[in-house]
Image 1 (cartoon, rainbow, N blue to C red):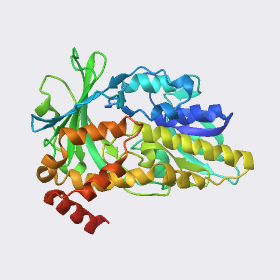
Image 2 (image 1 turned 90 degrees about the vertical axis):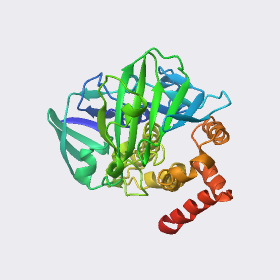
Image 3 (image 1 turned 30 degrees about the vertical axis):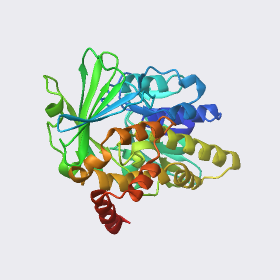
Length: 369
């Protein structure tokens, strides 16, 4: 039997950052990771600047590309381009970023989590390599979370399907993100330039996904991986007794952009606070975790969800009002402050006098409130 304060299932950004946050609070943890040290994780790898205020100082020197320009295309035609050079996002290679976040923590690689049971004062968990006893169990095991399935927490309901590849390329527009609209009816495509390659991808709601859309705006001889992403669709119960979920295992993925790295790290930071208080006071309740999420993350997610329902389905009608350089400049200005404020965009849409925007707004308001 192996003993620890917190057993974390999953060693991606959610699980690794949680272990780091707990380490800084003097709390022991073990991370169960079913892949190896250098898992080839395909991911756009976009991270908002707010990550700097979240990660410990020792973890802020990760390898990254800095983006200061954005271009938006609609069906191959350049529609809008940012006119101001302002740093608004980072780009990372996920395999490198994940490995970086695991420095100095206890990770058990190539180990599969099997099941767990709860007693009055501990969690007993089993993997294919041994048994663990912990005061808390945290699922950070992504869209296919076994902890979510076994605990009944945060069932997966709202998916997008993404198709993505990392294509070796000499990058001439290293600091410019490219977004492609009109190839998937409810979704978008992207090109994230990195050092020596491009993260090329396309995604949409599961029911509207069109395989091969990525090759429409970036043709070539390369293979793309298809995988699901579980989006946030509203508040859910994310803890039960000594068990909790973070990151995509908890469906904490931006419902507008489908970005998941920052919400993963933020949810882990908030949970680390709650675990520390519970251990200090001899309690088992993690109830405060959801209260913190409701204060720090959910308000922005609510606006993002509303805007996603209005923007993507009505794109052919509203694109000329929202996909323009002035809107892009506003987006980058807001994002350059840390994490984009969807509330500001909501207010802009609410105040708009354009008939198409107003019509879309009232339709979504009527059906989704």
